[in-house]
Amino acid sequence: MPRLFYIALGAAAGIVAVRRAAAAAAALSPNSVAGSLVAAVKEFADDVREGMAVRENELRAVFALEPGEGGDGDGEVGTAVAMPGPRRA
Image (tube, rainbow, N blue to C red; front, side, top):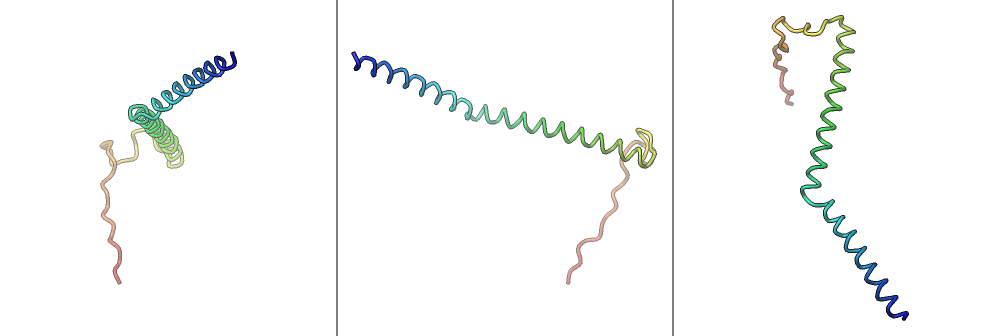
């Protein structure tokens, strides 16, 4: 009788171990990892956009600019000025 108990216990432990291993393998599959990575990048980009909007509003308040104001009037960002290169010894 004890032999049958230990056989059943071993079979149950084996089934649990196989199911957990399969779940871990599914969680580490390329599709799952890529999906979570894409979600993390999208969340990061949303946080950056939110921070940019907050900072832009702060700068507009400091410089007393209205939304859409601040360029040369055409709604585009001003022309970049070329910076001098590094000095060489």
